[in-house]
Image (cartoon, rainbow, N blue to C red; front, side, top):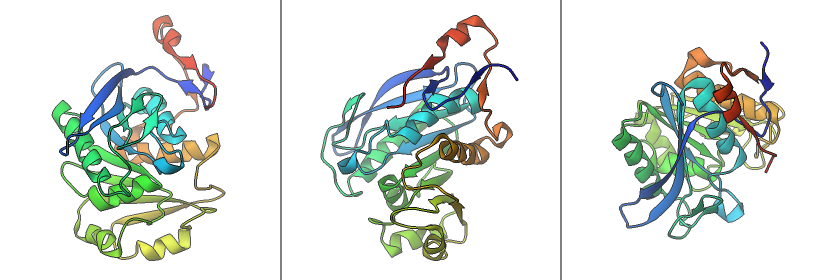
Length: 254
């Protein structure tokens, strides 16, 4: 297939909307919703970013690339937002960092937004700190399942993890072989009490998933759960008309 190779900075066509979320404790959070240009979404991803005290935000690279690619390549809506007290190019969310406690209200606001918009089949995508937020607060309606990138299990208690045993929701953990905090063998032990948990060790990957090879692994796993007919994702973008082709931008790696 001819076309443009999808690179780290490729931004594919989507409808992108700056949004605000409102928590039940009175905070306003900044975010973005990216949806397919044509047709209804096949599913929805709600992204929960890494630790904001160490640079995590809605623009953390894997989440940014999910929003740049998945609406066009897989028909998936992607919602990203800054948790309380977090800053990105989109702005700063109100509030202060709360060690995965108050952030549960932030996730609830995002889930409520998706529900109110009528977006289908929401999955939670947590990365590092975001996985703790998801595990502590994400076993709720109408969430279909959770995808965990580099789960450190730092803020999640054994009791909170064990509670997922009673859940019907899918739980998929992508664990880097060379992770700084939790590696595949230990992760399998820690998640053993959750029968539906699938722990996938990713050879050569590190906690931050740097490199296009590892980003594509993550995005393919997301798509296999939400819209399997679109997996594996293509590595080339071929636009069929000039107007769409013109909408594709090339951004340098941030």
